[in-house]
Length: 324
Image (cartoon, rainbow, N blue to C red; front, side, top):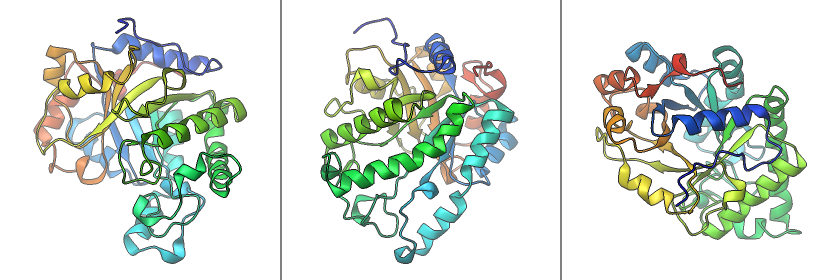
């Protein structure tokens, strides 16, 4: 493996703010870890909980874009789905507040209701007839509708680019699994979907503020060093099991010989910050998932959370330098 961390943006036209973030992350690697928390609603109960327990806020906040999917089938959706969509509406307002007023780092997750053929929670493969293997073929209806949905989301992302706000963009997350429509047809199809989006967003829409995060630990279907800045994986260890996740890191970095920046895209329990401070496994951030994962003691005790956020190795919002 090349020991020099690759920090040049995969997008040659990336704005300076993207370069600032990548440079900062490179310097942080093995010396600290960004605290992170996913939120799904405008209430953001997870942030209130963390601040109440620790007196601090995470350096990195995640925002969910599912309600911005243009093809939600409201007429064939259960109560849980409708509630989830309703509570998620206007989360971009929170993202703007986080970026402009708190100056924290942003990541987006898009549980993408399929471009057509969906019912209920249509981001799940079992709830849609949409065929991702057809969507990667130019000229098909699936491809046309895929691009239309991508373009819809690009318009929502464009103002962040215009304001020069860097965004950690993690599309087609958990591509190794068969639970989402973009993964059910196999890792090669997921790879092609990602590369189609990269081409569309970079060369057509000019979204030069995106930091591209690939989210799968499989070597099969890896998108390629030329289209990603960070490699990541999602993990859900048993409750109250806090480690440095060294074996998982070793698995992830095997997907490419390049020395890429590495991150935990989602995790149920926070990693052990004291252990990471000792072993220096170079996870650059962790993102606790939302709801009970990030707003209760069901997975991480208040004592563990308080200790993590106040550990010298942890980077919280107040420790984050101005990067944009």
